[in-house]
Image (cartoon, rainbow, N blue to C red; front, side, top):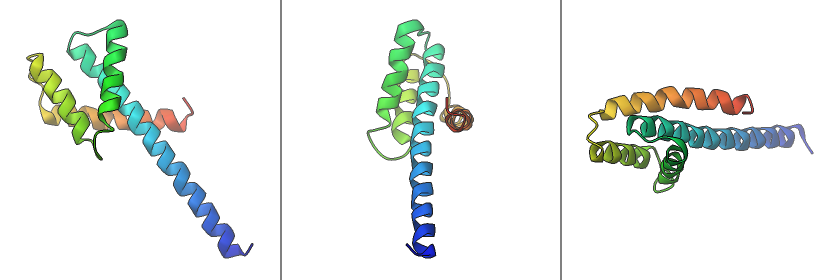
Length: 107
């Protein structure tokens, strides 16, 4: 195997690892977001964990964060909570940093 082939293989492995970590971090962020939203909605215990799973599942509807954001906003509206889209997006940004750190730490 030539040096070029070795480097190419190394880049491909790094890309695959980065994409896997990104996927895991987004799923963890969505779970944490679901737990945060559940708390705001007055949901606790097993019901909060189930709600967090619903939020994670919502992310598989389409690419990007729009599907998760719409679910949370709709649930907040149904619960008569006046939390803005900007506040939810800010929480998503905060939690992606936490989730990425946890994934890198192997948690």
